[in-house]
Every structure is written in C-alpha cells, then in structure tokens.
Length: 234
Image 1 (spheres, rainbow, N blue to C red):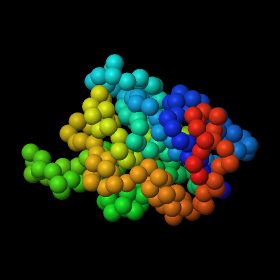
Image 2 (tube, rainbow, N blue to C red):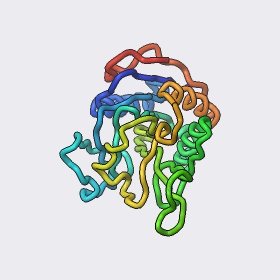
Image 3 (cartoon, rainbow, N blue to C red):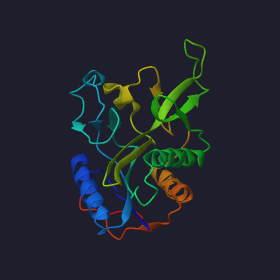
Image 4 (cartoon, rainbow, N blue to C red):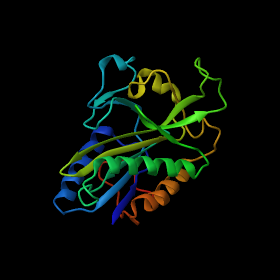
C-alpha cells in the first residue's frame, strides 16, 4: 500500500530532496512503504539534468537549486501543489515509459475532476490546456498554456521527485525562467482559468484519481516527515 502524506506550510526544497532520497533507499531495502508526499515550497527555481543556462533569465530573483530529476528549469512556489512520488517501479512492471504515462494520466484525470481538459503534446513535457478564451497565435492556432510539470528520477527502480500542478501560484514568478525550455507558450493555473479551486479540493482529486490510475488504496500517514514545517493534513 502507498502512504499518503500532506504537509501544511512551506517545505524547504533541499530538505525535501534529502527526505526523498532516504525514503527511496528505504523502499528499495524493504524498510519502508511506498509514499506520495504533497507539499508546497517557498519560491524557487530548479534546474533538471537537461537545464540550459540561457533559460535562467533572472538568476537573482529566487534561489536556484540543482535537481537530479530529468528535465530543464521549473518553478516551485506557494499556490502550486507538488506531489513527490516515491513508488517501486520495479514491482510495477519495470516499464519506465508506462510509469511516466501513468503520471500523465493521473494529472489529466485530476484536472478532469474540475472539467479541465489536460493534454499531452509531442516534444513538450508536462500537461497543457487549450485557451479558447485568448486570441489565436500568429499561425492561427489556439494558444496553449502549461498547467502541470512532470519530472522524475529512478534509483534501484524506486522513483522520486514527481509532478506539480498550478492551483493559484503567482504566474509572474515563472518569467524568471524559460519553463522546460519552451518559449512560444504560456503558463496557467486552475484559478487563472476562472475556477475557484482550493489546494484542499485538488488534494481530494489527486487522491481519488491516484487510486483509479495506479490501482493502490492510499493510506494516511500518522506523522509528517521531519522535513515538513507543520503537521500533516490527512
């Protein structure tokens, strides 16, 4: 079964990474259960293993953390739900591509709970929404904005890092980077789309859709990780 942890307040990024790495090692050793950990971070940028220095357009704006996840630059901050996914991919079929597809399906299904159609685009990492409420692009196509990011790492077939979904972050904070190296598209959030969705609403949907996509029943955590700055909400 998968332990389900939700931390209130803002969680330090480096401490979160240390917790994930230790938890992944413990899962691989058979000493801990798989876990999903939902957090919010203070404003920061992370550089994935494919990050290009030129895509950090405002390096002095927020702290920049080198991340071991795949991908390029991303932003994390208040109003964005980050779901750290510590699962045994080995026991789930040894199929990394299928695992990433499941993460995408999880995000899309969660957005669907709020009648938002999330979509995957070839050559563009993450989950996207079509903006019928905005002017067409110069090519005459509908504008598409990114609403969720996906970036994972595996060690001994245990995943860590995970997904992020924009609920109500300050979208101006994304302007200090080229998100995931993509310049011709924007960034949006559930609230930016006109939906009065709270973080608690999203958490309920994440939990429900996780069970449908992955087939696991979440188990509430009794205590939050030591890295959390407050008690968990379960």
